Amino acid sequence: MTNYIDFCKEDSCGLAREDLDLPNLSELEVVRYFTNLSRINWAVDVGFYPLGSCTMKYNPKINDFVASKFSDIHPFLDVEDIQPLLEILKELEKKIAYLVGLDSVSLLPAAGAHGEYTALLIAKKYFSTRNENRDLVLVPDSAHGTNPASASMAGFKVLTIKSNNEGQIDIDDLKSKISEKVAVFMITNPNTLGIYEKNIQRITELCREYGVLTYYDGANFNAIIGKLRPGDMGFDMVHLNLHKTFSTPHGSGGPGAGPIAVRGFLSKFLPIPIIREEGGKYWFDFNLPDTIGMIRDFWGNFGVLVRALSYIMSYGKEISKVAEFAVLNANYLRKKIIDYFIDPFNAKFCAHEFVVSASNYKDKGVRAMDIAKRMLDYNVHSPTTYFPLIVEEALMIEPTETETLETLDYFADIVKKIVDEANSDPNILKEAPHTTFVKRVNDALASRDIKPTKRSLKK
Ligand SMILES: *Cc1c(COP(=O)(O)O)cnc(C)c1O
Image (cartoon, rainbow, N blue to C red; front, top):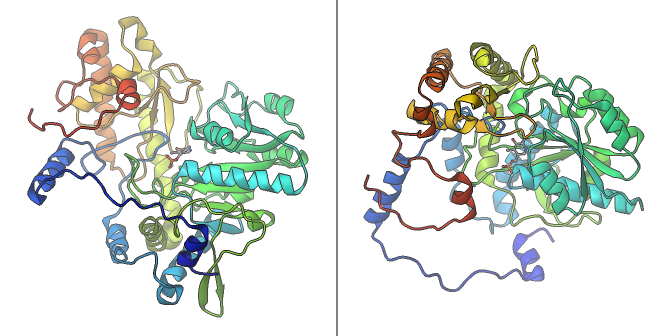
């Protein structure tokens, strides 16, 4: 069986609804509504967006153009008729395998967290075929929240590994927690503090001694792309966020892709279908006896995958410049503003992002959130706040490789203005933002108690 329709018929996934209660609006009303909404929204195409850990960089429009050429292709087409599309997917698999230094790739996962979850299911299956009973996953305390969440969704228990005073893995803590009960060790490197784990090879070797699989969270691959490969650091599994590093815009849950790559001994567990090639002919292989099964419908988010291939190919051998500029820009900006804050780890350099603590303004009643909100009045998006959790009053800043020197200088200037205000007139910050369409909101309530309505766009 190589055909999705046949597969679906057997699996009887007829979940489509017959009716939908859609509002009765004219096209003009809908167009105006969404166009106006977009004009009160912040976007990387509008201004600076230094969101740490979530890489909000400019994505070249040429890659949207390339992806748009494939927008009319239906996933039910016969494989005979979509051979060039499978070639695109295969080509992207090969390029990703090369960039991360591992053997086999699945392009199916729809997001970073979905890639983590898929890889953890692979780990689970791997240990169950070896009759090994391992139910623990180790995650550093600086990890992105999706790491422990994916581990626990996949049925593992999470043990947290402490960071030391350099913002790196505390090796003694790792040694005290690692055992033959541990299935997977997950880490981001550079970690979410923007610090490169200098002991990474020692860590992956230690894991191997205990038979623990190692997982590299490559969501922010712009930090090392073309320079370093997780496979060479000793990792067994990796995911990438194509919607951060590889030219697909992200935010608001739009389509993304979180492909995973694994070492050869894990290939047989990859989700189906697998794309095969023989003598220039491509097909989807559903017959993988040890597969973890299907993890989504169809073949992945094709438009996102096309953008990624287009992005990789347009850089070619120059792709390491992405990492060079990502790291250069972050270090430049860090030097310019670090003295206004507390430097949590006194690191000499940072990687593609850095974290400062705004706890030195607490005595004025000013918190990291107030500084972040005030930035909106100066026409930049705020950085990530209160993450990683191990830094008090954290502001996590990632300028990205696509910003100009002028923009970085502008940001440094407004940070200076804002901290001056914090000292002289803290209320300006506490009531910020003043100039945006929507004023200060209760962020927690806004996401916990969602009431979707068509709101009036009048000021
Ligand atoms: C963004 C991010 C993720 C999760 O990616 P999603 O696509 O949002 O699921 C995981 N790890 C790190 C370090 C990230 O920055």
